Amino acid sequence: MGSLAPGIKLITSFSRDSWYRFFILLLTFVFYTSYHLSRKPISIVKSQLHRNCSNVIHPSDLNITDNDTWCDWSPFDQKNYQNLFGVLDNCFLVAYAIGMFFSGIFGERLPLRYYLTSGMLLSGLFTTLFGLGFYWKIHSLWYYCLIQVLNGLVQTTGWPAVVACVGNWFGKGKRGFIMGVWNSHTSVGNILGSLIAGVYVSSAWGLSFIVPGIIIASTGVLCFLFLVEKPEDVNCTPPQHHESAEQEALLSNSSSNEEIFSCHSSTAVELVEEHTEAISFCSALKIPGVVEFSLCLLFAKLVSYTFLYWLPLYIANVAHFDPKHAGDLSTLFDVGGIVGGILAGLISDYSGGRATTCCAMLIIAAPMLFLFNKIGQSGLSTTICMLLWCGALVNGPYALITTAVSADLGTHECLRGNSRALSTVTAIIDGTGSIGAAVGPLLAGLISPTGWNNVFYMLITADVLACLLLSRLVYKEIRGWCGNTTRQRGFKEI
Image 1 (cartoon, helix red, strand yellow):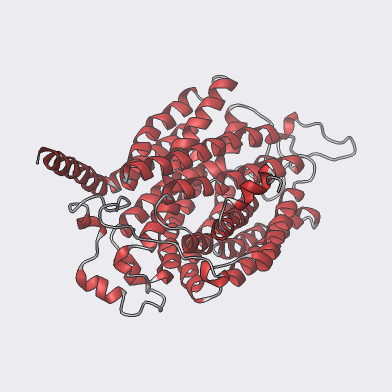
Image 2: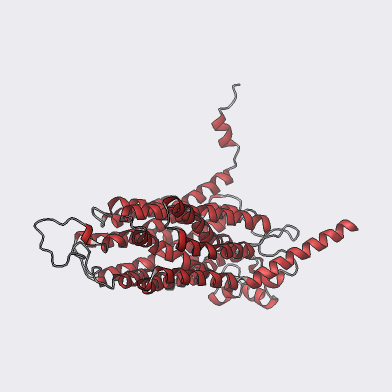
């Protein structure tokens, strides 16, 4: 009998469970890529809605009253356009932050497949409606604000649901690395959203929203057709969420670390009274580590989302690029974010210190932000290098907290097997972070008229505060490593 073809050997070398896990990982990656893809166009289009019209050749038959604003899109042709952009951003982000706290509750009580499908279809609808404002010639700020609010609410369906789905399929062993790679969907979505919006921004900016809207709606149909929520639904083996005491390395390194990451007996009893019932909001807050990581994410996401919404405009204003090239260049920040998220996952898996990994990257990020503002625009090569570095250091901790840390805490051993806590814990952590995501772009809009230097001082301050909020957990992790080293040495001497 002839030997099997190499490709068939490769396919048959993986078990049925492995193929399903890969399929779910790929599917949820595509889903959340489309979510971020549909959020990005607004940051690209800003520099088209308000630009320096004195450098633009106007049609000969057009009667111009103001040479500087004739080509701007009303109402963003006013002098306070930066404040108006800040309002527009916050309509989405505040609605997103508020909705996120409720999204996890709904996500635990509704089928994830239906929940995600409806969220993506509605996101596609509202994203498209924003772009149709160009063709319908709508110049009302209230129209765009209303669309942003509604889109912000339905976009909250994405994150808790996809994290809960991945958490259902993957155990704890290499969660940092797996979710670090998987979490690159955020940056991939930002990159694709920037590139797609950049194609149309100078000719017909409405298509910069309509095309991403169609894409996310299409992925909603894909979700309805193919998503499998749990391994048990297709007779696959459920993952192991908790390791043995000797191997426990994630969020509980030693007996001293148990002080942070183990529940008091009364709390544990309260949480596990009913394994099959969805966990309450207050009970989720009692899981050790949830509050600290949530507050840290608030400031980390403040920095990340300020870059997400304002970086193209900053590059256009400071480096004097046109809207398309500024948008293309800003994607390098997200390229760095992909590398940073994967490195953060690898390092935290190897060291067993989620908090220490986040804190170390945040410490390095602060001076890098300062350097980016001072020398980042001195040349194209310098700009590229600084964008990559800042992207890695800013998005690394953000990626780790929203994925591996959320999944660790949502399947914490003190929950005693309650698998329905993951969506609520994820929503609390990301919802708190979304408050920072709303505040950051708002502050940038208010501060930027006084100078971009002040915006970067605000970002550096937020970065330092994020680091300080993890200091207690970092101390316990380091003390746990020292304790382990001492016990290992003592064992060898015996």
